[in-house]
Amino acid sequence: MTHDQQAAPLIDTSVPHSARMYDYWLGGSSNFAADRSLGKAFEEAIPSIRTMALENRRFLGRAVRYMAAEAGIRQFLDIGTGVPGAGDTHSVTEIAAPDSRVVCVDNDPIVQAHTKALMENQASGRTIYLASDMREPHQLLAEPALTSHLDLDQPVGLLLVAVLMLVKDEQDPWAGVGVLLDALPPGSHVAITHPSQDFNPQAMAEIVEAAERGQMTLVPRDREQVQRFFGDWELIEPGVVPVMGWHPQDGPPSDPNAAYYWSGVARKRS
Ligand SMILES: C[S@@+](CC[C@H](N)C(=O)[O-])C[C@H]1O[C@@H](n2cnc3c(N)ncnc32)[C@H](O)[C@@H]1O
Image (tube, rainbow, N blue to C red; front, side):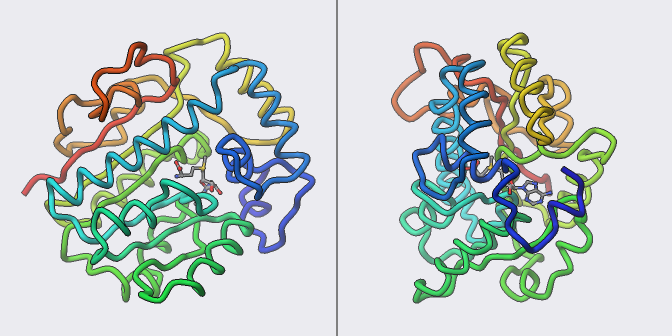
């Protein structure tokens, strides 16, 4: 899928899309035949893919709660937010920090449609949705809706959860993330998850092939490549670790490598 096609305002349900496949694995209903078909192909290569999607979502919750409780963060910028649903940034902050403001960014029209409905039903107006593309970070940061909702002189919790694998190397996602990190003040935090071939190279190769057949970009990255996204920010202990092993809530998981994502949270130094 080309950049132009992804940015198009029309919903093309004949082409599988990451947001809707993820929604399918999480048990949602905002998905179509093409999404389910490629979602099942991924599942054949990685039978635990639904658990992986769920574990990724759980990490998002733990990271947001950490930022709110430990760092006092009250504004969140969630890029690649996905179809709204249980355990998303809006609902986690509703409980963990209801006085916080949230900007959800996504470039998928179906996410846009769902989030518009969410906003219309939201009395507080503390969460807004922005149709924008992380591959254009300067444009994203200059969006009037973003700059009027968030105070970029105060710490921000930036979420790049299960989204960077959708940007090709040649589009230099490290440079794009660098622009975002540079724009945020000290005390800001960033949370990242990223699927990797490090855990099960053969299964990951199979889903990359399936993604190519479905015209979808999917770039797994190794631990060193994922760690580079954090730049010179200070990694919160335990650093870049398997997603199930980052601050697990119910004690150490029996097999932290069962979900093939690297994850981490880092803080911008003063
Ligand atoms: C797998 S979902 C992740 C959802 C959520 N972050 C989570 O982890 O629960 C990836 C999301 O990133 C969005 N996305 C993909 N490329 C993007 C881009 N270039 N800019 C903004 N969002 C993008 C997709 O539309 C999709 O909703």
